[in-house]
Length: 250
Image 1 (spheres, rainbow, N blue to C red):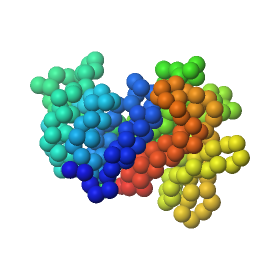
Image 2 (tube, rainbow, N blue to C red):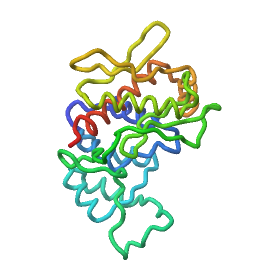
Image 3 (cartoon, rainbow, N blue to C red):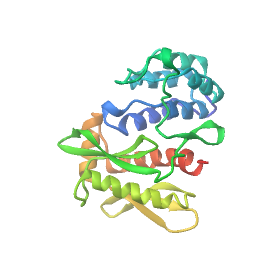
């Protein structure tokens, strides 16, 4: 059953955000995403359609399924997740030797309401290189709690895309000290930026959308992507993860 105000357009927007945010091989959603969609009262059919569309796989233990029920995920969605097991990694013990490894992000703990949050000591955000390339551009990811949050496809004046991702992660870690605010799109002349608008201070630029970023996302998505669309996507993703895993962290 859809929540009041959850329209077909909002579902399509959600699909667009999740499918465009990462290259195709990385577009699968996580247990965290399923919990968040359930909390936002998206219908079972919508969540299951998203799981199937992204060909998402899950490694769930008995403890995980109990926790999912506590978080409000329905039996129908849990059955769909159980029917799509992630392949076992080399060196992983058989299920008879103990409970399966949960598929929550590495090092994650549960904050208010049991939502996974970045409870591991150290910086919340980090960066990693990705093996894929789009339109000849090397990819790097800004990660949070083991999850890829943003994918950058251009150096933008840095020595590499990885160096750029590290700079973005550093900016986000600095903002996390006083996290109250929101991410928004700022347009200044020919440049389109994502900035953090603090509730008690000036806005801080996080990253600029470059033509190479737009070209890479357009190639990955196979559909028109503009700088404004990409900036809105990045701002929406950051606001979603920020509200749950930074502001809402324990």
